[in-house]
Length: 247
Image (cartoon, rainbow, N blue to C red; front, side, top):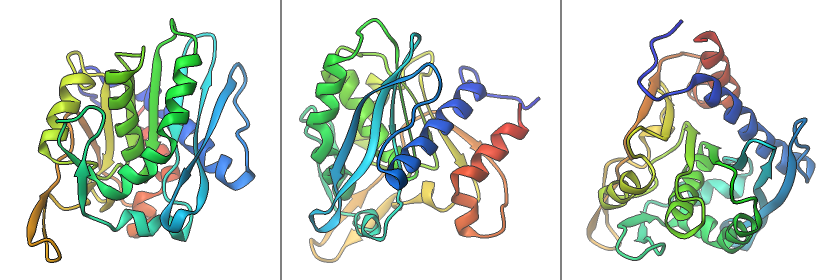
């Protein structure tokens, strides 16, 4: 068995990874087919590049937990959002640093629906938030938003192959609300995957003649697998295989 860091639950990461796959299946099939024992509470569409409406995630619950899941890039239009590196002020709450403008735009377009679904959800259940790739960045924003603005003040989050979502001030604010002690927020990242290294920690914006800074929150669980090429090193199915081998 692998040596896991204190607080990290590999079985939970594998379970939530399967719910990331459900979000991709939702986009492909036009709806979520929940696993046994779960009921879908809400499905979320968000505005991608050029005003295109796409399914991006869902909230579901069982007798034991709530799960909020977001998918990653699964259409060419999403790439236009991924490659914007400009930042905007985090609006929930104000003063929580700067966040990636593309990720902010997608999350903002479904934020009201997510908030309404959480407000109507069983308040006694623990909330788990997850996402892969771009969906990991959306999950990070959603977990922080929930911790600050919803009844679910202590969400547990596990993302897979997530890019950086915001600047050092946002990372510090996130750490203070979500990645507390004991750790309840984990980023699973393959050391051979380029996406968790994006956006770069420092980017000079020629248009605005200013620097943009990016930083991950705490609590990374770094794994190391080589699946053949850059794309394969990022795929959810290969992360799942690597985590399964560690049990």
